[in-house]
Length: 347
Image 1 (cartoon, one colour):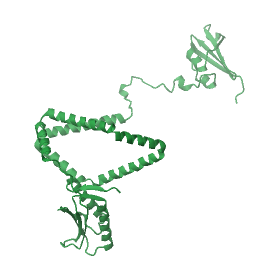
Image 2 (image 1 turned 60 degrees about the horizontal axis):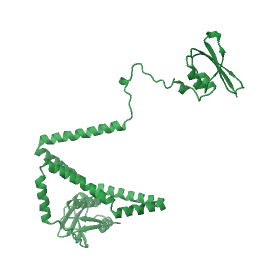
Image 3 (image 1 turned 90 degrees about the vertical axis):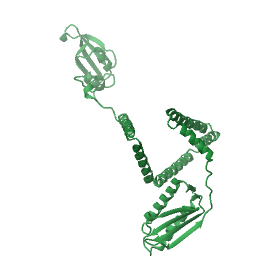
Image 4 (image 1 turned 90 degrees about the horizontal axis):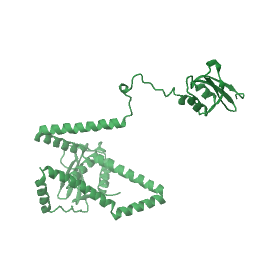
């Protein structure tokens, strides 16, 4: 298992260690009062004091607890720490009933920056802190720096070589590549869960609350205006997101008067494929034009003569195939009558 390095001189790392050990002690709440755990780091010695609930606690459970603590510290690389000590006290007593400790290899702390460099950086910031142009140039510099770093990473020969190797491995063994991706995703997920679990959320929330309080104390009107603007932007973004994700709606006020949907009654939805069939015969309606009838029945008909029942301008047109024959009477290009005859027995 990969060792985790913590620099206890860093405030965030120190809080993370306290949070992890307190959570670890809460797993043994039958023997240890986790909320009374105390930590001290002086002269490269890390001291941890646990409080036992009872004087006659289960020795096996206490031994299991100390062994698990020892295993946990074996996975850590503590910077600037040469010895770890942990003690157990009874509630209300000052003398430890059990004390253990061990020396660990000393890892030197990273070298701090030179004071001259820090001074120059502070002087540079103090010159442009209140200047709008300085703020704009600072933002542009950050964006440009990110772009340069991304371009440098993409053009790095090591990145290109790693991409080539990965593509070759994927082509040769796609199943193994998928398995490696799955393992990496699980490891990243576990790291994320561990980070969420060990992050000092309570301290972070208190710090943010203090920052907001100080900002309101400096200039209440400006702070309120900024809060209203931020809230308005968030609400607008939520509204746009809701509109983008929601389905289309029908606004009845925008529809024309006496609007109706004629898709179901349209001929092309009631008739079948073009041809001389009984279904197409049924869908023929009075008043249809000749071109509509011919498109439904699949082609031009054959004129038979004049139907004197409807006058001298009534023309009989016939369509037929091997099974069915249809006659239609048109007056002034309008269908007025229809008839059919089955040529073969229906199955």
